[in-house]
Length: 194
Image (cartoon, rainbow, N blue to C red; front, top):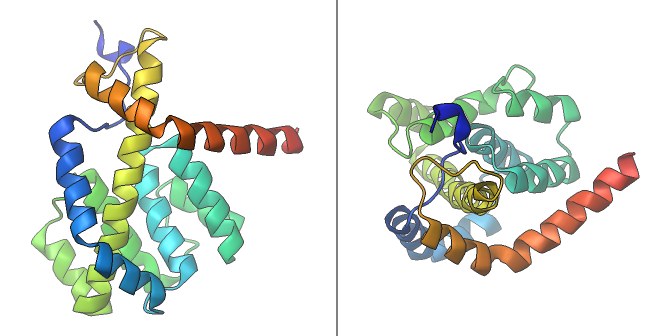
C-alpha cells in the first residue's frame, strides 16, 4: 500500500493508551487543584489545548476547544492562527507556553531540556507543571479522537499505517456515545452556519 493510502494522524495502541491514561489518572488530584486555581486562565488553557490539537489534528478536539476558546473570550483570529501553528496574534506572555505545547506534541511527549528550562524560566516550576498537565490531558483526548477516526477510516480503505483493529474497535465502542453527541453538535452548528 502506498503511504498516501494510510490514515496519517497519530493514534493510540494498547500500550501507549494505558501508559498515558495511567499518567493522567495518577494526576487526578493535581488536575482538580489546577482547574480550581487561577494560575492559568481559561483563555490561556484553551490556547494551550488548541496548540496541541493543531499538531495532532483531532477533529473532535478542534471543534470542542475552538468552541471553548470562543466562549472564554479568545478572538477568532487568534484561534485560526494557533490552528495554523502561528502564535503572532497571541499574548506575547503566552508564546513560550504555546511553542512548548506544540513542541511537546511534535516530540510525542519528549521535549528537550532546553525547551523545558525555557518554560520554567518564563513561568516558574509550578506554572510550567500546570501547563504540562493541560498538554497531557488534551493529548489523551486528541489521540483517542484520532483512534476513533482511524477505525472509521479503515472502512473507507485508509487504515492507519501502524494501527490495531482490535484496539481501535475497543476505543470506538467505548467512545461511541461521546462521539455521537459531538457529531450531533457539530452537524447542528454546520446547519446553522449554512
